[in-house]
Length: 152
Image 1 (spheres, rainbow, N blue to C red):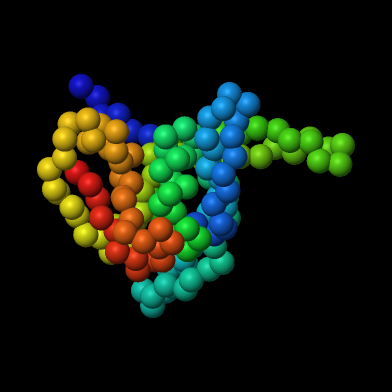
Image 2 (cartoon, rainbow, N blue to C red):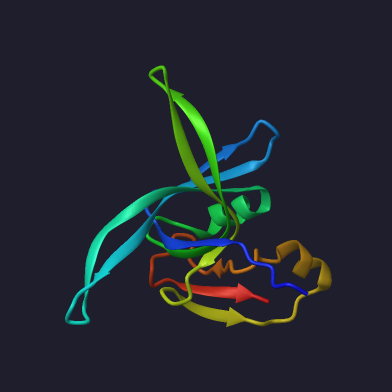
């Protein structure tokens, strides 16, 4: 069987998360995200460059969970795809793109976690199951060094 892969995006949440509802009544999560960039130098060291900034959205259950768990400054890893679309501004059509996160979670390399493996009833486990890679945070306003717990 072939290995299933998707596009991924990692970086940091650069804006306050925004909540909206689509025409279909689905929850929408929107943030600007930043991606750090570095240049390798001849001496083997690295020079940090300015980050690039991009749009990230998530919908439905992923959006609901992201709204509860992410704050500006959090490091993340997301799986999904890039969607391109056109918008009209001042009579001019502009091509835009956004990353649609189907799964999103805090970056384990940059976020401290505590894993809670307490047994739960099957109904509660199904209802509260985190999005793959997402974490249930102890603090509703986490920072990059926040403690998180993952209910498994």
